[in-house]
Image (cartoon, rainbow, N blue to C red; front, side, top):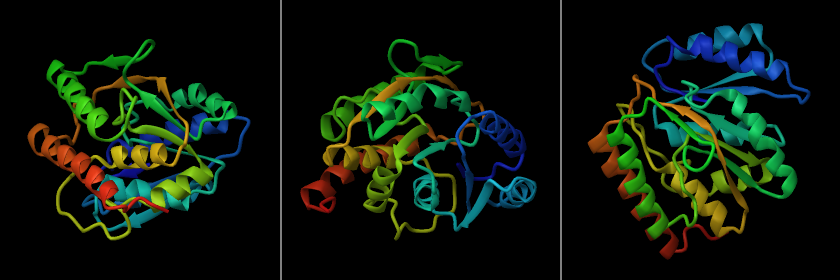
Length: 243
């Protein structure tokens, strides 16, 4: 779970996740990756982890969500690796709808806010419209056949996760330090690499709630996401995603 300036809502999120995981029959761990927060996010997570041995905290410089997710995924030890947003805009319970698909041969299972059964709660119309336009661009240039590449609730087989995230280029090991919150198209790169590698990807409809405290800047982040999609295509043409 990447976290940037989340000290206020992080305690409740951690309680919800650990309570859910404690009820499951499988073993689990929770990794919180602090993305160079300017508040007490890291300290809050570490204090919680001191009382919960299955909770680990990674402190990063502020390099953005993509870099933070990558750090957490590559540090994970489970057979299935899932990342989720810190606000739990998709409830953690949705994991139960995703895990069975791995038994059917899928290497990546992603939450989707589109399709039958999906629920989008309190999302402004303009945000939904922006998302559909962006998805059209994504499908045209990079990831084929996926209706929602941007939902922050995605799970991977461990071997797929290690391969895909280690091959990231836009926000990989050499990602630059930044100063403000930054929403990016790292999901597009991750899914493109997986799809290019022949990994089966399954979209599962989930419930998703729009957060009034979202860090998305409609103009700035729309341009950055578009640029990222173009860069994924350019990197591919240059052979940068070859093993």
